[in-house]
Amino acid sequence: MSTEARTRRCWWRWPLEILIIVALVLVIRAWIARDLAEGPAPEFEAYLLDGSPVALADYADRPMLLHFWATWCPICRLEEGEIVRVSESHPVLTVAMQSGSADSVEAHLNERERELDVVLDPDGQLAARFGVRVVPSTFIIDPAGQIVFRKQGYAPPLELRFRLWLAGWL
Image 1 (tube, rainbow, N blue to C red):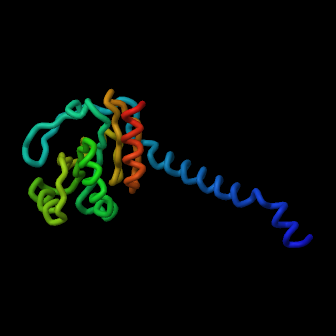
Image 2 (cartoon, one colour):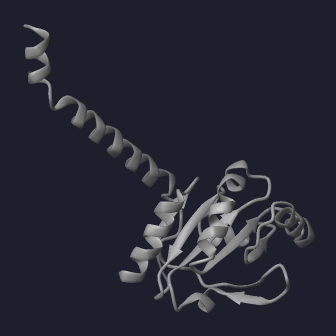
Image 3 (tube, one colour):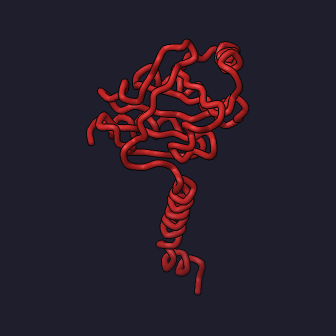
């Protein structure tokens, strides 16, 4: 059989291979996020770094992003600029998990010229309520308090913005 005939006969192979790779990536992502909270977001009350009280209910008017991170996490450092940019157009609350004192987290943010609403979670209790074992972990919560998106690991900024937009329409 000639090369041309073989090429015509197998035109469907590369789309099938791409489909298999995409399906595999989606299955792996679902498996990684299997322990993360879903459904109604666990309510909590805490304090921001500046001492002001904050509760999840404070964000009930719009879709919001809840982001768990740590000062020692290289992937968190990679995406924190994008989280700051998302916070300029959407409500964002971040949780510094096992990252030291308020002063050390504040110093980290100042050093990197970042401004975020941050709750300290020194012992991981808040993270455990959301099923978070790995940072970064990201949740998008709709105005009704339902978790509509959850992800562990790097979250591309366009995906976050699209899902926040979508959460406003659901």
